Amino acid sequence: MAVSLQSYLEEKTSFIEQHLTSLLEREGVPATLYESMAYSLMAGGKRLRPMLVLAVLEALDKPVERGIPYAAALEMIHTYSLIHDDLPAMDDDDLRRGKPTNHKVFGEATAILAGDALLTRAFGLIAERYLNDPDVKAETVVRLVAELGKRAGATGMVGGQMADIEGEGKQLSLAELEYIHKHKTGDLLIAALRGGGYLAEATEKQMDALTQYGRNIGLAFQIQDDILNVEGDSSQLGKAVGSDADRQKATYPALIGMDESKARLLQLVAEAKQVLRSAGMDHSALMPLADYVMERKK
Amino acid sequence: MAVSLQSYLEEKTSFIEQHLTSLLEREGVPATLYESMAYSLMAGGKRLRPMLVLAVLEALDKPVERGIPYAAALEMIHTYSLIHDDLPAMDDDDLRRGKPTNHKVFGEATAILAGDALLTRAFGLIAERYLNDPDVKAETVVRLVAELGKRAGATGMVGGQMADIEGEGKQLSLAELEYIHKHKTGDLLIAALRGGGYLAEATEKQMDALTQYGRNIGLAFQIQDDILNVEGDSSQLGKAVGSDADRQKATYPALIGMDESKARLLQLVAEAKQVLRSAGMDHSALMPLADYVMERKK
Image 1 (cartoon, rainbow over the protein chains, first blue to last red):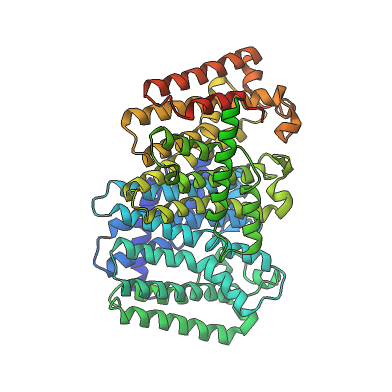
Image 2: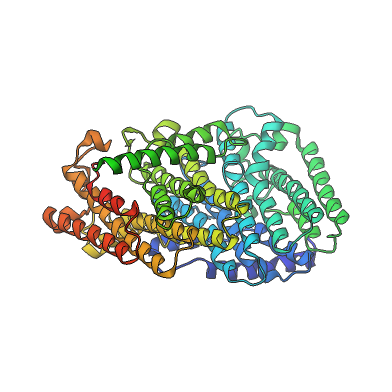
């Protein structure tokens, strides 16, 4: 990873995390519930979704501050999905990013409620924070909520997780595998990019480019995830390598082979960058972020 | 229950249920996920929250149709909370309204996801449906989302459920019991009334009255729930009578006695109606609905 991207990521991560804490309400929340929400929200991670929101604002020469509530909301939704996915009834994972999963620390009931509360807070904070922001029209806020509703729910992320669970132990086709990834991972990345686009008052052409870029890096992200699960370093990943194969999980390397998976990854990222260039957004951090999705080691 | 209220409730229930089905997206949703969401959403129930939204619009001489998306969203949030509360890790209930609970029919993983998806859809549909409604300002929509975020999340309903779970098997004070009920049940009723108020462009005085009315009937609702759990008819309730005592659950009858509980109930409902009278809203269905909360047998 280039030194400049590395320092960009570090700076932005620190900026995002500082706001994440302050946007999680504490007053009037039962102490254990707050701790459980904060535990997972502040457990690290790449902060990719918030990063993309801020990068879109930068790409369209708008102040990044405007993206903070929406960026935080996306990270809360991402975090809730991880908490629920890790539950015994779902993937039954004990470790996440090298730390015990939420239900291992707080118990299942609290983990379920912490997830529910993070999801609810995501929508609430968008409405609450933008309500009095003179730079963001009320209509834009409504569009952000609609975008999240569509991409995070039954037609998006939750639908993808459902298909993933139903597919376990079955022989999936490539089309079925792509359906899962498109929704489980891709949709929330697209929501980050399109939401950033709404906040930056992007043109229709820019919005289409952001959507296509999101679709490509979403799939690229998942392919790299599958590759890392075979070839990665478990100490960097914070989870066991080879776990997909152990569970007989459908993955790109398993379905189309490792070489073809890597070729597909390169192609998706190249296309994503080409789309940005065509829309005149190639001076922005969105370009190196596309490479990062492919080159990351964790 | 008066004949007129009975037929009012039946008419409104049928009106609400007809819209609930159509507001649940089906296209692009994995079949099992859709079935699980629809199973619980269409499993009957009093539809009290949607009913209150429509009654506020009527009380303020506005078309009830305007309340439909918000009313449906509230019922989706209420339904998701029941699905998650019934899970083995939470209350571990096998029956709800006389039918097997969601996880008993679809399994735990699907039940968790169906709850997540209903909660997400609630916010999404408000944004999506009101976006192009010329009678509802975008700012009003943002206020609805903020209201729901506050009342349904960690500072509201989810916080109440957390306190309820933490209180199990403990000797609670009356103040602790009221905290639980205020948030677990009361907050979503208040959200129904205040949301209806926003949609009807209520004055500040009317909004205060609706909030106070909601606070009172929320508590009254819960006291009647506790009373029914002692004196009710299990075939009408669709669940076992005496289950609170078996679980040594803190209830009003257990803490302050049955006579005092009934006196409290009467007082809360009388006050709720008095508040409506003072704000000039006593010609509406909100009046008999307050009695209904107290007189209901299930």
